[in-house]
Image 1 (tube, rainbow, N blue to C red):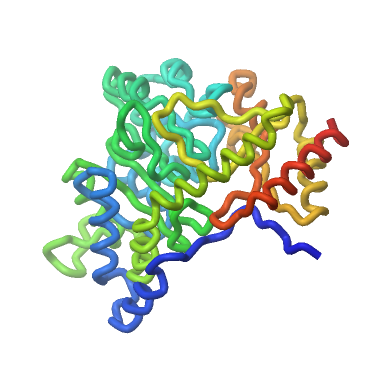
Image 2 (tube, rainbow, N blue to C red):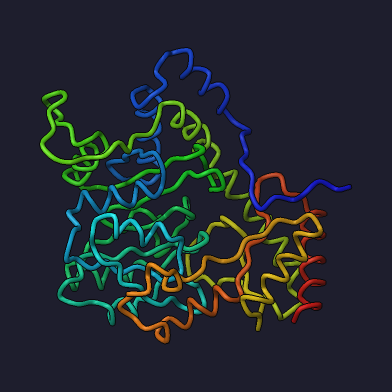
Length: 372
C-alpha cells in the first residue's frame, strides 16, 4: 500500500538541528538568547526594513501590531472576507470592529474598490492579505491609505519572499505580520514576526509582547501587556529555515508548475491569477469550476479514500455564526463565497515527487468527473 500523501509537512534540510542543539547547550531556551537576536536581525535585513519583532505565533503578530498602533473600541478595520479567521479575530481581540469586504474574482485578494466603499469616519486601518502567497494590489491599497490616513497592517503569513509593484511584500504597510506555523513556507513550529520601519511602533511592540514591562525599570509595568515572546529554540529553527528560503521557494515553484502543466488540458480547473512580480506557492490551490460546497467535499472524500490529503479553501468569515453581525450583507460578498465554494488545496511540500503529483492530478480529475 502506498504511503498517504499529506497536505503539507515541514522540511528540515539545513542547520536546524545544529542551531537547536546549540541553543539547548547554551541554557538559553526561553525568550532570551542569541538566536532571537539573530533571527530578528536577519529577517529584517532580508526584507530591507529596520525592525523585526519575533512573536510566539502569527495570530499574536497580528494582535500585537494592532495593539501597538492603538486600535481599540469604536474603531473599524477593513479585512477581506476570504482569509484565515485569525486576520479578523485579531481585530476583535482589540474590541474593534472588523469590516468584511469582498475579494477580486481573479487573484482572490482584497479588492481596492471594495476598500473604498467600506471606508467610514470610524475606519482606522486595513489588513490586506496576500492569500496563498499571491500578493494583493499594494500600490493601489497604499494610495487609498494615504488618501484617508489609514494604517496598513500587511498579513504576509502565506507569502514570505513574494514581490509586487517592485517591492517585497511586508515592506509596504506600517507593520507587516508573518506566520511560521508548521505548514508555512518557513516554520518554527509555532511562531510569528512583525516588521516595521517605525521606531515608535517597534518599541511599542517590544514592550507589549513582554507583559508591558518598562524597558528601563525591571518588573515595573506602565500598561497592560501580553506574554507574546518567541523562544530561543524556535528562533534557532527559524534562522536555519530563513537561510534556505530562496531554495524552498524555487522548489515550490517547480511543484506548482508541474500541477499546472498536468491540469492544463482541462478547463474545469481555475488557478489564481496574478499581476505580481513574483507570487510564491504556499499551497497549490484551485477552483473546481461549477462545484458547490457539497460536491467539493465529495471530491475531497474521494481523494481521502485514495490516500491523498486536501483542504477546503477558507470559508468566508461572514458565514461564521459569531460574525453574523457583519456590516455587509452576504450579497456584497459574492466573490469570496464563490471561491470558497469551489476551492480546494492540494498537497504542497518540499520533497513532493512528480509521480505523486501525477497520481494526485489523475485522482482529482476522476473525482471531478464523478461528481460534476
